[in-house]
Length: 190
Figure 1 (cartoon, rainbow, N blue to C red):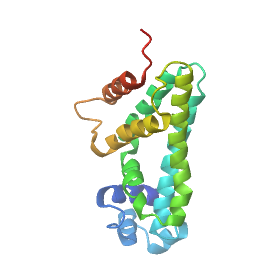
Figure 2: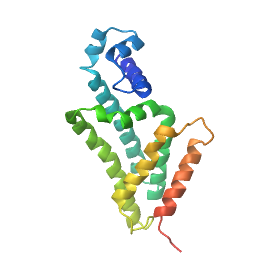
Figure 3: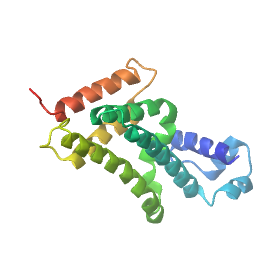
């Protein structure tokens, strides 16, 4: 039942927004009582926290799997991370929308719990870029912290506009992004 409440909340927050969705809206959509809701969650913010935690932990697990693959280059790992983010739009679009758009509704105390995990994802990408610079795969004259934020900005903004069933496939969008990124940061070996 907790998963049904979470899934329904993700859908409603994605469509209506966190502030515009009431607990009554959630329980009506699930077909349960408010008592059932409060059995699993303290309040609506608790639901939002759990959505955020689940989403970022899922991304971190996927990122770790990519980064731990010792058979791939830093360039291949970066490509795989961006592709993973784009592929997640199809399967996690509502969760992502809530994650990126609704964080502003978390209290300062709850934000302190979520931000380190969001930062961890960015820092892991930054370290990947640094390893790529050391391996002469990427240019050394650009700041790895700014590059990691730019790459995440490009990929994450796609959650707001990209239609996986539209004219451009996930693979094609990833290829476009990576051509833009690599031509900007790849070391010229000529």
